[in-house]
Image (cartoon, rainbow, N blue to C red; front, side, top):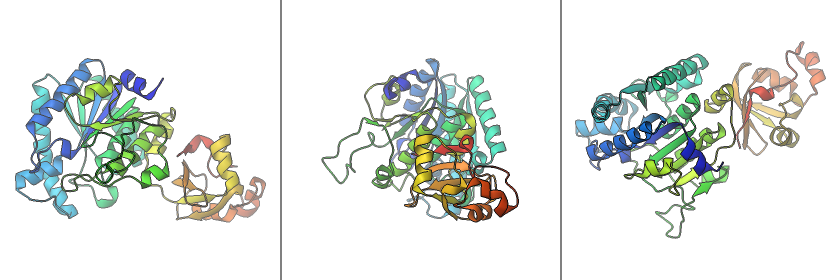
Amino acid sequence: MGARQRLAAARRVVVKVGTSSLTSPDGNLDPVRLEGLADELVRAQAGGRELVLVSSGAVAAGRGRLGLLERPALLPQQQAAAAVGQGLLMHAYEQAFGRRGVVVAQVLLTREDVSRRERYLNARNTFLQLLRWGCLPIVNENDTVAVEELRFGDNDTLSALVATLIGADALVILTDVDGLYSADPRKDPEATLLPEVEEITPELLAAAAGPGDPGRGRGGMRTKLEAARIATACGTVVALAAARPGVLGQVLQGKEIGTVFAPRGFQPAWKRWIVGHDRPHGRIVVDSGAQAALLNEGKSLLAAGVVRVEGSFPRGALVQVVNESGRELARGITNYSAAEIAAIKGVHTCDIERILGRRDFDEVIHRDNLVISW
């Protein structure tokens, strides 16, 4: 089944809408845009789909109510604006969907809610119960209380992590551009829209542009590609399209609109958590032989293929596995601590007990706890 066909067949869908798609240039919520979004989501829900909306706009709505001419630059200012705007945003959604007979539920998340396994499972159970009740969960980052190191940084990343958390069939990112172009269309008049992307390469990420309107939002094309990389790695098809009237419905019909990113295969729930845990605790650098074994042969990571360890982490930590050029190959849960891996790097499995005084595992990272990144 092709990526467009998978969109048309998707039953559980996460829709992300950006700040610029919900607000007017002065920073206030645009009721016409919001009502149009509500119409499209209700139509999709009436067609038998389970929907989750990841919505930006709280800081911008607060900025408009406070009369601020520019987006606040400092974190406490952004959090204060979010505290004002979050209520305005949810009130607008409650009214819009209430008129259409749909119950909405506010879900505020921080990075800790998806990085800690217990909280991840609790959040998943809450989402699934809301969907069983026929509610529309509306998700935003908990901007008001999240400290810098616990923030997602943009709702593109948040939408991808929500999609992995609930096992979504599709993620639709609605934004202020038509899709992914071969080059930045603001700078290159010959840039062309890419209708489908099979693989999100490091080169594609490096070429991505920054925020389209930094005054109203935090994201940009790079964050959308990062989100697509996370979601497609878990088997979720991703669509990127302009937030214009009727576009969401066309995307969910599989029409040739915007850019679609093909999923790379199904991942079980445990491995979806590994993919979604996007702040690893360290890095393990491996040689070319280990790289080939991981990418081409479906093997576990053994000590013999480890070149060096970067960072300090305990056993059971989530880490990146990279090659000697620094390219990420995989992510996984370690069986040994950073100090232990450093001590056994490059040795055969039979020598681990001699060096450490024990051999709890044959593998540094077992294949069951490893997810290939590219």
